[in-house]
Every structure is written in C-alpha cells, then in structure tokens.
Length: 161
Image 1: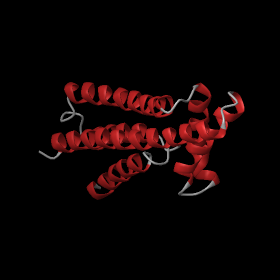
Image 2: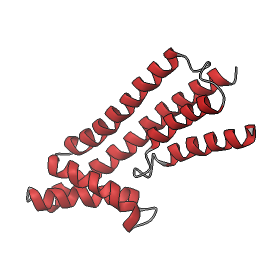
Image 3: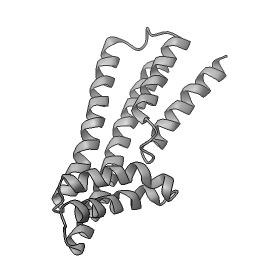
Image 4: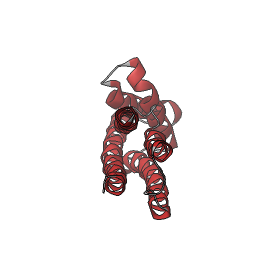
C-alpha cells in the first residue's frame, strides 16, 4: 500500500506544479491535499502545528504573490483595472482556446482587449500593457514555484527524516 499512497501523494504534488502554468488547476489546494492525505494514510504526528502554521502562511503568500504580480505587471506598464480583469480572464480562457501558447497569449490579448474596449486606450499603449500582463504572469509563476518548492521540501524533510 505504501507504493499506492506515495504515488497518489506524488501525483497531487506534480499536478500542483502543473497548476502553476494552468491556473484552472487549483495548485495550492492540491499541494495542501497531498499533505493532508499523507496524514490520513500514515500519521499526522510528523506534521506538527509549526508545519501547518508555516504552510498556511505560505499559502497566503502564494495568493498575495499571484495578485501582486498581475497587478504590478499591468500597472507598471500603464494599465488599469480593465487591463487586470482582461488579463485574468485571458489567463483562464487562453489555454482552452489556444492550447499550450494560450497561457501567454491569453493574458496578453485579455489585457489589450480590456484596455481598448473599456478605456479606449490607443493600440500602442494597449500592446505595452499586454506585455506587462505577460511579464507579471511569468513573475508570478516563478515566485509561486519557489514557494511551492519550499513547501514540498519542508514536507519531505519532516516526513522522510
């Protein structure tokens, strides 16, 4: 049963990292679920209160980093709330409309479209805002990947010692 249990936990952790580039996959939820499943399958004794406090703080940090990266990426390049909303919608729809490349093209088109439709931003400025949204997304993915790596590393450190 150990092989089955660890396979389930590993799949959830891998899917959590896939969720970094496919935002419709709830990466943080999968990661925390993997930790909870470990406790259910084996024991919660090695996952002490300090572990859970740190994990909750890191989950909050992931949400903040995700929001701030998108906000700063769009705002730094002159965007508004319309660009942020457009970028977010494009990020969610892009991978479905344009598989693989949609993860970058979606936020770009969403931010450009949002700015041009809502604020009547000129084309050149809207393109610049679209680039900012893509850079914000890339920054968000990198930041969240480091946080998730730390979360998994800390988990493995506690359960494999």
